[in-house]
Length: 227
Ligand SMILES: Nc1nc2c(ncn2[C@@H]2O[C@H](COP(=O)(O)OP(=O)(O)OP(=O)(O)O)[C@@H](O)[C@H]2O)c(=O)[nH]1
Ligand SMILES: [Mg+2]
View (cartoon, rainbow, N blue to C red):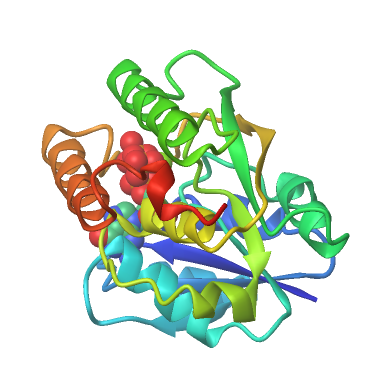
């Protein structure tokens, strides 16, 4: 069994599609971060384990899910139907096989409009920085991921907002993890855009990631990586 952490803020419209597409052997953990649209009821009605996290923030939700998980390998993915749970084995299998310590799904847009240009550009710039600074073979910082639960907890991630996914990669690299990437389809999200589709969300995400980069010696410099 593999636990799948789904941070959720008002995704009642997306959850039925997402949860009915979980492959056999994958258990969804929907971390409700104070949704006002009944996401928790929809998640429970579709068989998910529902965890409530009162502290607002993407990282707070992801981390609450990680703490609630019990499987050896844990996946993360967004709950907005922009990623297909049927592709979870693409990220989980290399970890299960012992070939990788952290696998990120590189988002490949499956339709026009799935990925706003500014968000795509920001991710590409960040990924290039990680390639050059931390020597990681990444071209995206995708939200569909898999790693080993105990090792992820051992990273001791501190960010509780939008810097969480970046901090995970930086700390994994600093710890000498094998971080790899595999292509996954990126679909137009269901429901209203909250982060990269809005100016406010984008600015918040950039500010949170800057804070993480600053805390990690600037830009994930090679000096933070063991030889
Ligand atoms: N817990 C929590 N989850 C959030 C928050 N903001 C967004 N999410 C969830 O995190 C996932 C990713 O957020 P999205 O809103 O899809 O962010 P995005 O993909 O950058 O941009 P859009 O899809 O355009 O909104 C979704 O499952 C959201 O429900 C938040 O503040 N707290
Ligand atoms: Mg999204």
